[in-house]
Image (cartoon, rainbow, N blue to C red; front, top):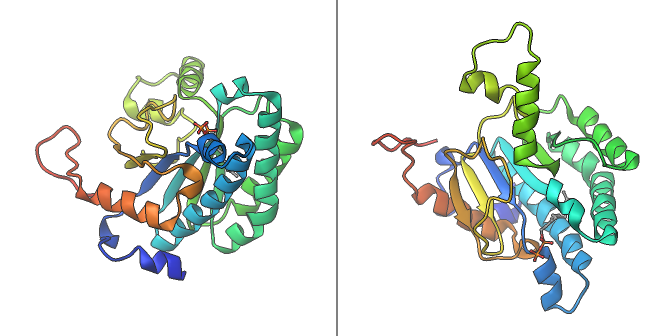
Length: 246
Ligand code: FPP
């Protein structure tokens, strides 16, 4: 375990960590603006936060991490910024894939494949294939992801099922992009914004939500430790009356 991860252990109960953490990584643009730099500088620094958070979750033994890296709404951004984000994902995978593979990380993608340039898809597919047998941290990159779109895709898949089973929560969950994953226990959003932004609309039904005021490029091990401690203070009742701990 790295020194930085060890530093966040005090006050954390490792038996009660969330099984699945989902993060809306927000505030890259503001981080850059405050420094008088172009927005993309914030995305680039945000990539370093991505690396830290993946490593720390892996070292803590958190089984699932989902990162909202590009939403269906992000296509409305200037073309240059979109191109930068696409290239940044390729750069990240080029640089980090071997290391992530050694750490036992398995990479999945949640989202539609349409509109994503072929070279980006090739890079994602390579990462998925190379890591598919890994049993460490299950890393889900929500990329070209939209929650409403996912729900519509699932409805479309359901009506085409032959034979069509009775519609239950279990049947429906299995038709989502997250079919094999447990629902997130903890949703983190950075930069002090209180919005779901079309993220995991079905899966977040019972998640604890922690909003961190810190902008994503500044969100590292220490900030992750803070949100995990906040999560552990919460009493989870899932609509019942008794506390249920993950
Ligand atoms: C939101 O900040 C962030 C994004 C839309 C992109 C997230 C991308 C990264 C963190 C880059 C690295 C990712 C990977 C997986 C390599 P914003 O631009 O909306 O910030 P603002 O609200 O301050 O403008």
